[in-house]
Length: 415
Image (cartoon, rainbow, N blue to C red; front, side):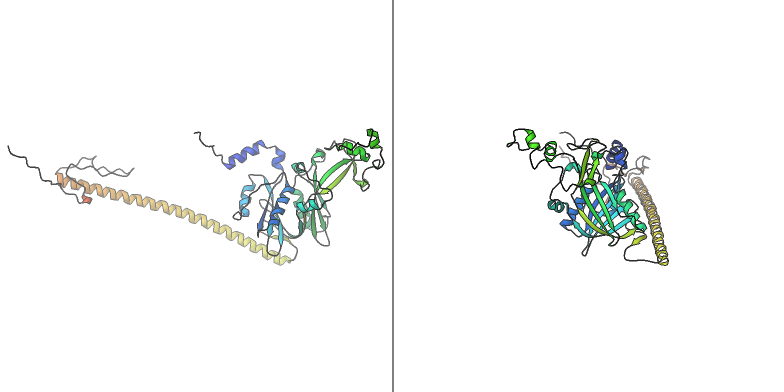
């Protein structure tokens, strides 16, 4: 039978992955998406949909348990290049959405007013567009109306942008932009609407019949003697769809995947919503990882004196925590030192007891035999457990009530 597979330490395996991965993957922002709080199947589905948005740089099959804490995910973040964590927290009264910048913050807390799952968005669409290839590349992030007053808007916009890799316009391959993610801020209601779209590029300037042939759809030519009859037939001689907006027409600088989308040719860019939808409101921004100074709060406004008092309180708690940690380390070292001394004292006492037993055995040997024992007979061995010396025949050790074995001799019959 062959031996089992040799186990490899996770840190060693992760280091090997880092060495084999290209720099653009290592430097790209990665994410964890989890859900906490009360159990709800809709929240679990929403978590899976949001992981789909964050692909390909996210843990799509992340297995989380109730016993897992936030610090467990933070401790693993450095090994897997994880820079952000998104948390859906279900409480009895509301659903909150938290975005954390690992490992030291800041932390943004949103209140979710409405959400729609991806399957509901796709099922309600007139033309359903869904392709697995859309999720092989990160989406294009679009920020709308985040230029208002307040540092919290800039911080919120930069947080959303930094969750996804940046795009170099000079080197980007247009064929990799298959999705876009829209964050739109309403300054009156203070709500942020998130929408997720699939990008489709179709050629324009073609007759509808020609467009069908170019797209690969096999037309029905039963009533046509030639292809020309199909192309010039009434009802097929119109241009592209009447509802197609001319503002969506662009001249492609590169050839894009799809039939008819060639370089320097005019095409139309269409968006198809694939979900999920989120409508949320920023409630709080904390300096640390779910702790620390509150940089922004939507409901509570504090004066500078209250902020200064809160900073002093936080600093006092931090120093007290450091002092307790220092005391714990000192107590641990003192206990280890005391335990070593106790073990040393126990070994010393055992050595003395063994030495006294050896002296007793030597004196007993002298009293019974009538001569001094050899030096090697009762020599004490301190390095290992000492065995009792073997006494002459007919004698036993003193601690076992040793006495001469006086057995009666057998009488021999006289001849």
